[in-house]
Image (cartoon, rainbow, N blue to C red; front, side, top):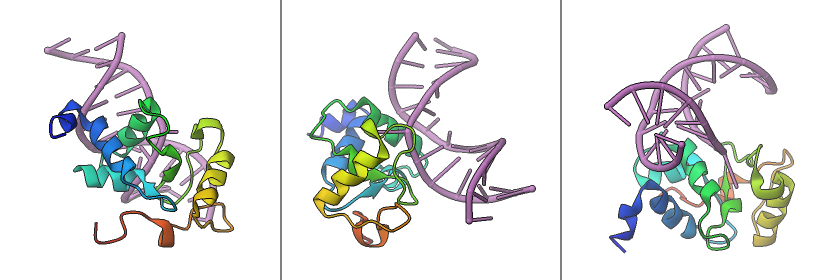
Length: 110
DNA sequence: CAAGTGACAATAA
DNA sequence: TTTATTGCCACTT
């Protein structure tokens, strides 16, 4: 496994996203920060865009820093993504945003 | 080798 | 408050 993270920044992002439990969401910036650099947020999303392991990589659990869903992609529409998150138990605000204050995965200590 | 690109984030107006 | 612009850094061509 140590060899796996040598594949690149992408593999590292995938590894993080896979660790996100159901019913929780992580932000691009948060993932970027966890992998070691807070400024690679753009590339975090790009990693999911490649999505080499569909099903194993819950892209729908990754949202904007505001809790907003991806506006231009969202594998079918933010509408679908919201549905998937609700299915997992993620809370949503009336604004259409994820309840980051409750469902944010890197909950403080991590 | 150099330039371009990209599911964002933060700051300015 | 929302919209526009800039910066960021790995990866592609």
